[in-house]
Image (cartoon, protein in one colour):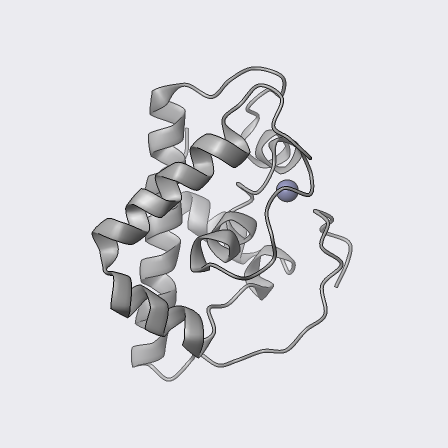
Length: 140
Ligand SMILES: [Zn+2]
């Protein structure tokens, strides 16, 4: 199993995964809610959207924006079970264990922290890009 740093590194080499960035609105939302609340949101989203053996609408259950955690889920390939299997070799059609869920939440929070850090170095910006709304690395 890769460390969080290794996973983020690998993801950053994917053009599709690396194309997700937090907008100023997302960053303001993170600031307003604070890390503990955002982490609770992440735990809820992971539980509902990713953990079940058969998640509802699998492959399309995670919006491309609307909450910073949604972007983190796409950026880390934790958006659906197909991506999860492809990137982390976690088989589909079985529920994620507590440990696996915690690992996903840690990865999401690490990605969000990294995005926040980018703003200190002037690397963040609003990008307007149309997305197809499906999990496909070949789009965009
Ligand atoms: Zn996906």
